[in-house]
Image (cartoon, rainbow, N blue to C red; front, side, top):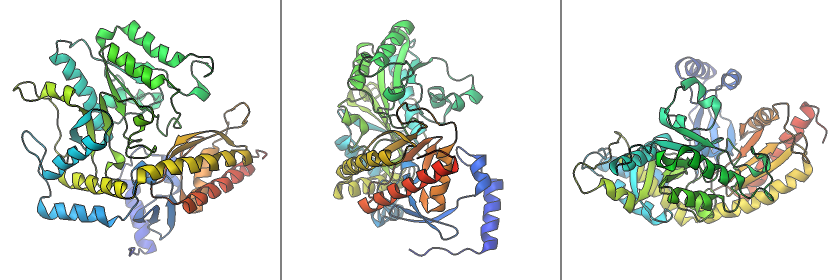
Length: 460
């Protein structure tokens, strides 16, 4: 790989233009004031910035690059499709061959009876489309009054006005209110930090009972869908659901004619040691949203998946069609990239490799916790892990200082990209990461934790 060279003057001008002419997604003015991070190259699990520095990426470019950077197989697939037909919309009665072949592949690898695709360009659109599909399905069956949506506090579902309405973080909702009516919020499920004040060994799944009570209170005849992440994402620290919870949710939704939507935008495509996270609990939703790692980030693509039974309500008979669409959903180049990406994952057994990585990191982080007092709760599976920092391991007392940002910045200076959500450290590398590279991650984390303890005057 040949990296482009930039002079100090060119770098300064690019940084100036970046600051003045681009609003970054989920911008942090504090971080922008430190440094504009401009990347120019990638290879495997590593990125190179405009100054020629090399970084080990432990967050896989926002949890997208499952098979790593610089894969010629994906590049070649994109070029072949580009030379044949760069674009035709999946509109009205039009298809491209990559769209059809990817739909067949998704039917093969998706859980349960999910085998019908609706193509989009982002995870937010996929979640919004699932909610729209549920609403129209009820409307077509004489149930227009079923419009409410159950979501969970502590879960993120997207940036559209609709998905923001069902995102369980106040800070991501407050400046856009009033949002869509009918948003109902159930408790988040974090057994180690239960918002209901329960203990797992004695609670009797009080969090599940809270959903049942919510349905009864609101009247199931008014509720269209429940949207949830089977494994809550990095913002929540990947807390696993307690045994029986997801199965109970599935039963409640089926009993009350409520569509169950799983948001697997972050967790899909092998990251949990299964193709999709819900397979770890043997629960299949009515609809599932996927994006991010479907192309390993090489091109934008998302899919809303559902069953033939549900999709058939919108097919074959004139006048019943699903009233939604976008120009670039199912772009031919993106579908070609997705097919090549999935082929790599199958050829290199990366789903099984993710399960091995999960076991390896579980042991490593357990050992790290015995040596570093800042390490509190550790949760994760496969390549998705979160370390919650604590002031006291015995009581899981929350820190009063922002050690997470200090640790992230320390790791950056040492050549490692680390994601933090406050005092939650997130480790979510590519599925191709080696054990030697994982050892490097853990070693740098330990050094960073020690440096933070010293900086904030916290005894080891």
